[in-house]
Amino acid sequence: MTATVAAIDLGATSGRVVRAEVGPGTLRLDEVARFENRPVRIGDGLHWSVLALYDEALRGVATASHGAPLASVAVDSWAVDYGLLRRGSLLGIPYSYRDDRTARGLELVDAVIAQPELYARCGLQRMPFTTINQLMVDRERGLLEVADRLLMLPDLFGYWMTGRMVTERTNASTTGLLRLDDTWDLDLMARLGIPASLLPEVVDPGTRIGPIDAITRAHFGIEGAPDVLAIGSHDTASAVVAVPMEPGGAYISSGTWSLVGIETPAPIATAEALDASFTNEGGVDGRTRFLKNVMGLWILSESVRTWQAAGDRMGLPELLDAAASVDWSVPVFDPTDAAFYPPGDMPERIRTWFEERGQRPPRGRAEVVRSILESLAEGYAVTLRDAARISGQGIERVHVVGGGSRNTLLCQLTADRTGLPVVAGPAEATAIGSVLVQARALGAAPASLEELRALVRATQTLTTYLPRTGAPQRSDLS
Ligand code: ADP
Ligand code: LRH
Image 1 (cartoon, rainbow, N blue to C red):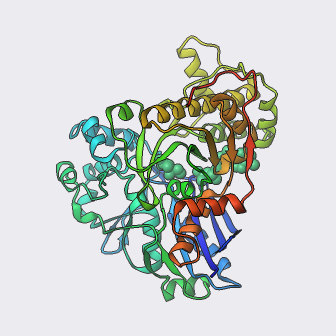
Image 2 (image 1 turned 180 degrees about the vertical axis):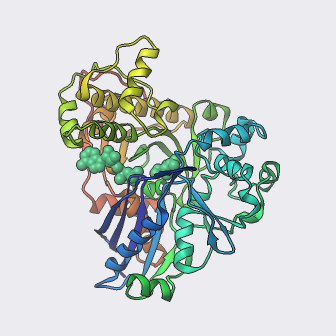
């Protein structure tokens, strides 16, 4: 049996709708829509244009539905962000996780629970954006007295399409409110003053949420009556489904963020893992993503944006070409430094980072770009060495998926600095992970993640980069 399905994949930089045919030995993808995603700053902070995203996404589904009918549709997005509702209506415009209210949220959470205790409960790396921090600000502003429901963004879209409210498990695991045993942490919510009634039932990837309702189908011109299915609705969960790895494989899900780590059978919420800032996120089929958020290509895209706003004409391809000719001895900074988290002038922040340490900053566009890429690659190498040490899992090969797998220079530098082969691709791993889990639920794809990954290996174009001799630094990952 072959299934025709569609994935709505919302990244922090762009969204897309992908139509796919999946069957025995078959995985064919066709991108039918792509649209920009930019948070918008208004008086009370930085927000996502959720209605514009929903409109673009559903129009994409309509395009995908023309021709062969779609059996199903699923939505994923970046983690942690959500909408608050009352009696089914959205209250306000969802915030972007880069809004600086999260600093206050961290303070409010810290006043109630110490980080080691929180880590033992939910296993998450301390990050300002975690849902729990954002919710504490909502609470302080009185919003939780009005709201009767919280829906993570993919679940909000699922609700708008079907009328049914659920929380998909992988994304729920990024809230800080789901315990490592996958149950809502009711005790913690009571301590924080977050009403447990806000949170709907948790469902697993593969669950049928319901058909797209008739009014929605008519409004957008969607043909047929596709079902909405839950998948790994946290984009990184779906991306890791499609990492074509075998035992000994590690991954870098490389996009706005770089998510660097390994898959483990169970969470590792030890003091050592906490110390090294590793997170334990819930994966599809109960696997754990043991990984670290390394700031990612955000530093590069914000740099390009800054230069272009100042009138520079060079785009990403030209800048990467120029950076390829820069010597590797360019200075390297810590890309996980919180200074790089908010939107803004990254070249200036990089310069400040070096000056504060009495070091020479990179000079000129090409050196800055090379410094960003070398710093990311070094951050990956250190993180993978830590992941191997803490988990006891040896790492023999690094897979890079997501838009960043198209950055050939970064892939090569990652091979150089880790001293390991790097296998790049697929670039659209998240959409692939979504369509594979949908097809599996429909009986058109094999049961195990290992078989799904074998299908990706057999059908997608992958490029291998080998470490070069004379590269700057290598981490012992064995
Ligand atoms: P997200 O899902 O977080 O929005 P993506 O996985 O789409 O991110 O990756 C976007 C990033 O991928 C861009 O910021 C850019 O740095 C990188 N990228 C995409 N295409 C290319 C390319 N052809 N060459 C180099 N980098 C690319
Ligand atoms: C990547 C991602 C990542 C989260 C961050 C908020 O898109 O979902 O896994 O940590 O966005």
